Length: 263
Image 1 (cartoon, rainbow, N blue to C red):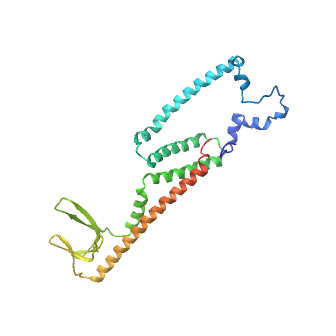
Image 2 (cartoon, helix red, strand yellow):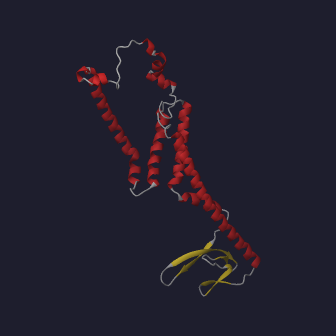
Image 3 (cartoon, helix red, strand yellow):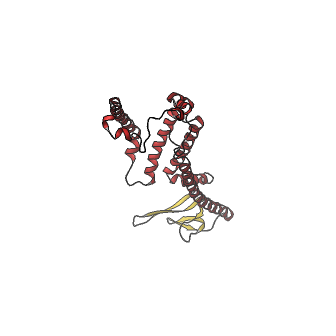
């Protein structure tokens, strides 16, 4: 029995005559013409003169049919795979492999649904596991999506904080810190190694720490900013957990179903 072989649909078996072969054939009642040790057809292939002309014609016709069958799929696959092939780059790592797997598995689902010969429950299970695999591959195709999703969940619960944008005479610039408007100034925390936090106002074009008009409100806003940063750190950690979980699940799906996705 083949690895992960599965029961065939009864209508397909009846159409192909497989039930008759399996159920009606009783080898004990068949008369033996001769026996030999070797590979199948050794007695025929050992002497080409023994091969009947109709067998030779059948083999030639089979090769011709096979050639046109291959041509058919070469043309079909060109149109089905052209976008994937066009977008592939030789320097891509797993991302390129994901693109190939996505195209093939999407094609497989369509074909399995229309022409699959497995029993219905096996067919449904194959399609379901392939769809789950595709969902994971779609997420893994853009790894930043994991952190973007978790970050956006956090950002939706907080106001739109501003950053301090600094332009230097040398032409460089940077953006740092988190600030929220309070009265005529800004409550917030600078970025960097030893950041200042509190109430800031601009003096001669530079943001400076100064006395807050409402220190309780400043403290509340800064506590909110600190909580926002902590939630962001946890969100990025969770994004890594989400990614690792998808990697583990993908490995499990491939291990359990890789040899089941066939007919």
